Length: 192
Ligand SMILES: [Fe+2]
Ligand SMILES: [Fe+2]
Image 1 (spheres, rainbow, N blue to C red):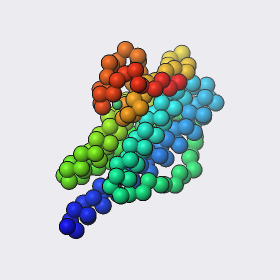
Image 2 (cartoon, rainbow, N blue to C red):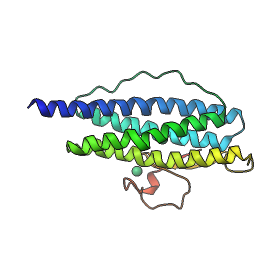
Image 3 (spheres, helix red, strand yellow):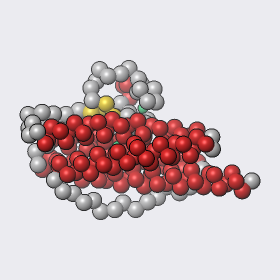
Image 4 (tube, protein in one colour):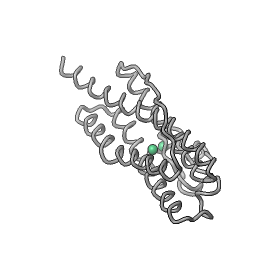
């Protein structure tokens, strides 16, 4: 049935686009974390590292589904443009906003329309984590702009990342289970 093959092809293309995006975002956030440490924004560096770990988990999840559908999970990692931490935070927020408002909703709708539950699950896990990243980046931008150097952006801090779906949480008391994928809280990775 050629229609089925064509439908899977679109889902695989979307999985590849998300895999490539998440892989490059991971590389970008690691570079942004180093710059934030250089500028003394160690809390912002912790956030970049935690979000970067989440993007790595998303990339691996997308790759797994893509392989199950016959796709190949290999992509180029592009050179990262690093500027100031404030601009890096803004660039990160822009990227997250695009994924939240446009990319993932479109990919989820496409996968749902063709009943591909594995693709729906990996895209939805990523979408929910991106919402947390966008909120935290927005908070960091506001703190940095208002010159609150005694706030959390200055000191290295802990974030909690679900190893299954990449959900990114701020405090230890937030949940017993991952609110997105139900993984037990004790499995969460502590990223500083
Ligand atoms: Fe993200
Ligand atoms: Fe999770």
